[in-house]
Image (tube, rainbow, N blue to C red):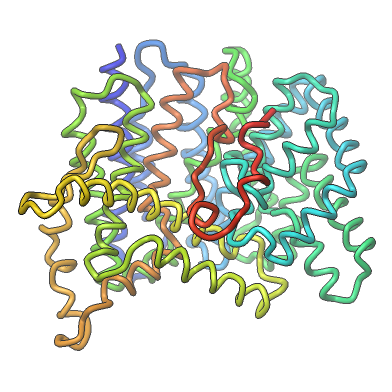
Length: 500
């Protein structure tokens, strides 16, 4: 049974990845329309439960992607780049409200948590000041772990002061990590208020009111945020209303099947991002650059070939996920090293830039550096694997074969990629020594197909379907943050060991 699930999850994950990559390769430089995402939707529709997997969990994923796609098609022809980051933030608010309506006890727990937010003025004040001032260095405000400066970190600390059932606390925590309960990141209201002349106490009070709204009225909070953002692409209120109606059956089935609420609020959100966010105008524009496109293709091929080469070696459902993300990390770091750079250099560079950026843009969006943070974590992980492989090989003229958890990574697709191996064609030929590096700096703002999100989302749904009673998010492990490991002293502010 384990072999059947593992083979299936690898096949489904890579089908999602290649659906994205192939559409982007074909459509890059052109105008994006919603129909462009159909190959991804088709890939998702091939997902099926096998063995002991919960059919209800798979249904949450598949129904969500189809509802998202069909609702968007009915509301708009396209989504402008300024609006596309938010398309994966309309699902969790609606799911939360379904749970409120179907389970009064959960709603009461949320109300107790909202009271806890009100009482946590000192904690929230401390954290928003730290985030505003860049105290933690580069961080990810909406991280799927409990790193310093993240929303889930602060939510976890508030939850520990509230007397509610453990399962409800875990669901509330999950809803603002892997689950994306609105687009709000802690500290945004505070920063804008004090920069506009408000007192610190008034700014903190307004921050608290916003956080309370996120949990009290999730869809209204998200609609309000989009009004303030100036969202134009489609009617977000209509989207959430229709989505809520369409997902009610899948949510009820999951509840009846004993799926942890923490999984119910997360599975439907992460999987929709490929439709009008990864496959989107912003991606089509970015990938007009041949080298950017080549990095995505080669990294995908490294991931694919590595997973399939190790299929008969995997013994648990967690190993393919670790190898997939690890292989991608190794591939990107290896491309970086082809131009004479490495992760420690880039972490130092982007951390220094972050502190300048804080001073230049004190009201920067809460998400500004989140993908830089993801990128640094990825290449730092890849660097550790590659560094060990280089040490082990020493001066011997043999092929470099890094390993992730004992599984060999195949770097051949990088050497077989004509674009990556011929940077002189994309700059002044005699001086083309930073071409691949410059493409990676574009991707540092947008590494979603390198980390890779469609692969992670698909594999995580498969894992959750095997362990429906345990909340899969946020990740209750040390994330080994690159900046914390190489530059900043912030390990003591993490919450991974203290997660509810």
